[in-house]
Amino acid sequence: MTNTITAKVAAVQMDLSHWQTMLADKATLLAQPGAHHKALLMQAYALHENRLIDNDDLCDLLELADGALAFAVESMLDIDSDE
Image (cartoon, rainbow, N blue to C red; front, side):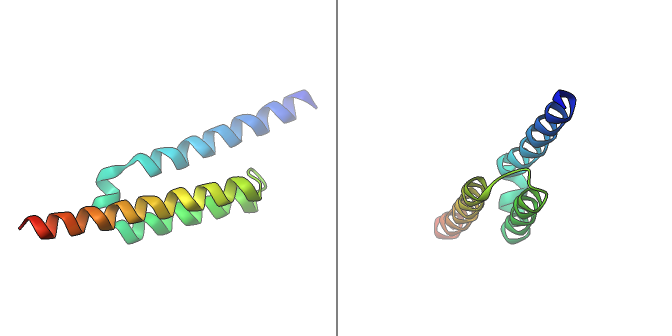
């Protein structure tokens, strides 16, 4: 039983680590904000569907993904206004 719990915790940490790495990938975010946002949402929902995160964690991930998209859009607007 302990091994099963340990394996699940490790899987959650690895999957969340992958999601956080995706979130921190500023180059991809700025190059393709819409596609990057969609990938973050899909990964967050996959974590939730596989019961690796609960509803509160899903909400947090979705808010972070939306914040990343807003950052990318603001950055694009700043670049356009500088030209």
